[in-house]
Image (cartoon, rainbow, N blue to C red; front, side, top):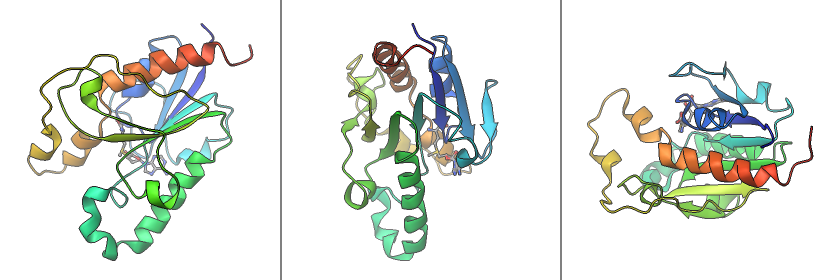
Length: 194
Ligand SMILES: C[S@@+](CC[C@H](N)C(=O)[O-])C[C@H]1O[C@@H](n2cnc3c(N)ncnc32)[C@H](O)[C@@H]1O
């Protein structure tokens, strides 16, 4: 399979990065935070490295001010929302041929464009519900890999604490594996040889 140069933007967990690296790709995560696990990681602003010749970018931008689940506070957040929408636009329109941007159900749909797809963890082996939207450029829809029962909303039951947001935002392993397997297979047949 062709070796891809993959940027996982806004990822501290290393989950998607390691799924691509396990398939032999040159994958790097980037976040303002350090990586939780050892691996290739740029700690800093994603826009410092976004022009470095990536084949594919998977981006997980912050959703705090954009998620519809927080809509009762929207009237207090206009400036933060405008800034976060601009951040999302810059990622979506980055000069990279293949892009996936992931976020919960959010105002990106009404203010920028509708997502190409909405997936659930229970379609990828995790017995949980969490509607996850994907905005795609130059990539096919993700196919469910392992549909399971037990559809509870674990993340809402988590106790409050400083790390709650991290536990809630970490990418599910089954989704990371599906992205790596399906999208690298797709790109193996659509990219010219380096
Ligand atoms: C919703 S979390 C995504 C977590 C991800 N799903 C994971 O498994 O690591 C959003 C992340 O974006 C990061 N972030 C915010 N602004 C950034 C920037 N300018 N450049 C890089 N990362 C940024 C935050 O530090 C935060 O970790």
